[in-house]
Image 1 (cartoon, rainbow, N blue to C red):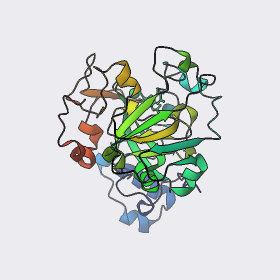
Image 2: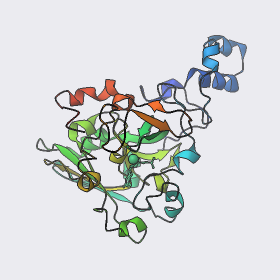
Image 3: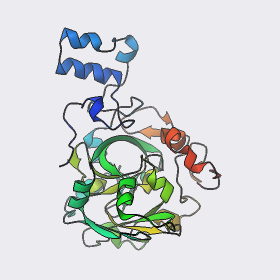
Length: 316
Ligand SMILES: Nc1nc2c(c(=O)[nH]1)N[C@H]1C(S)=C(S)[C@@H](COP(=O)(O)O)O[C@H]1N2
Ligand SMILES: [Mo]
């Protein structure tokens, strides 16, 4: 059964460690709604002026730093999905007739147990966890998104990569009849992405199957897509049909198209600018002022070790 996001925030004991906590204000708000009793109010943190000036969240969800989640409306109406359109506001309606079922994901290559999984197998085999992550697009806008999904590490444990496997190559479905953008000869379809195997094993890297407790909307990459929150959004490839374990660094769509602008690593880094714009700050959808962009999108503590032997200026 899907572990659906509840309409009221779940207790912290039911939540994946590290992944979520609600901002103090939200906790207070929720505690008030749920109980409103003097006993519970007594254990709630004191309401200070500071906590009252925090950003209110319309959804009641926030990331681990207290940033409010973007609304379902925002997340599903401003999408990069070039298979449908290069116009972010047009993707949602163009993706409406896409059929994400039936669906299989083939995992093959340098693994002891290659296997083609039905989407229902993946939902049954792996408990779906809630992860509220920041998503930072290379174009310098960002959102906070409450995903459901499971660590890629869990999938790898089932297929057993051989000792030669160094990389994962992910491939998006190719269906030009349903995805009009795929008729454009300008892009090397199908969309491909890749990770080093140790990056894929990091607990933050998930295959996401839903958001806000709903099955993954078509425009966000139904029925299953990658989410690697410390990398620019283009690494988080949508509507995956193939995952190949290989010993060679995979070609990726953006790297093939513009290698001087989009590297293989694509770690969020405010100190390495895009050749045509600064990456030092970003526009959070729904906010007026720009924010500073954080190294590894604020996940340095969890991922910086992966790159201790890498020159981040060269390996952008
Ligand atoms: N197959 C595919 N995956 C893709 C893209 C795409 O065009 N095609 N766009 C990427 C980019 S640039 C971003 S920022 C994110 C956007 O994800 P979202 O629409 O769920 O916010 O998806 C990524 N995954
Ligand atoms: Mo992006």
